[in-house]
Image 1: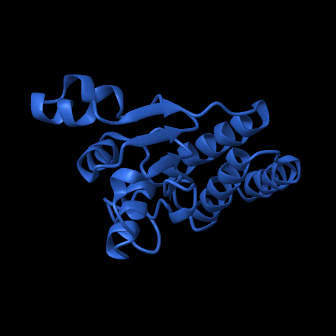
Image 2: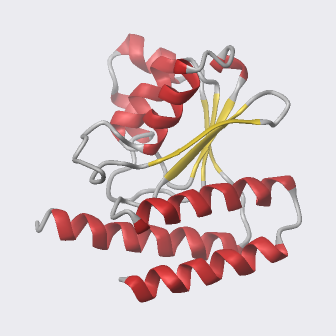
Amino acid sequence: MLIQIDKLQQQIERFKKNESSSEDQKLVTLFEHALLAAQEGNYPVAAAIFDSNDQLQSVSTNRYFFPKPLSGAHAETNALDDFENQEKGDVSECSMIVSLEPCLMCTSRIVLSGIRKVGYLLPDPAGGGIDTMKSAPDDFRLLAQRIEFYQIKASQQALEIARALYELGEQIWKKHYSL
């Protein structure tokens, strides 16, 4: 696994050198933080919250396995906790980007937070939670409809990094949960 992490680090460095837009800079932030999560032995997902002026307000990673098992320590919930605990303003005026589609738990937390716009780089075929909102109870489904969930339009290079992070995450997951 260390070789894959080294290879990913090189891919991220190449992407960083070629970044051409503010959106690419945001993706670099996600990639670097997701890689840190993997280096700690966590599933490599990162989430970032930006205010209405596109200023970074909070960024966090998945800390599900390390430093100790915490079932709710997903990147999205950690970023929201950080934002809310620091009282950085009205989250409904912010947007969130995530390196991987939020799971059901994180999608639920996002819906309840009041944030209005959430972009994700890669759909999660194994655990994505956005589509589950269509069959949620009426009140919850109505809250979810107020949020714009969208897949981030990214370069092929960015998508390759996101796929590699996902594959690494699946390896880490299987190491902990041999299903």
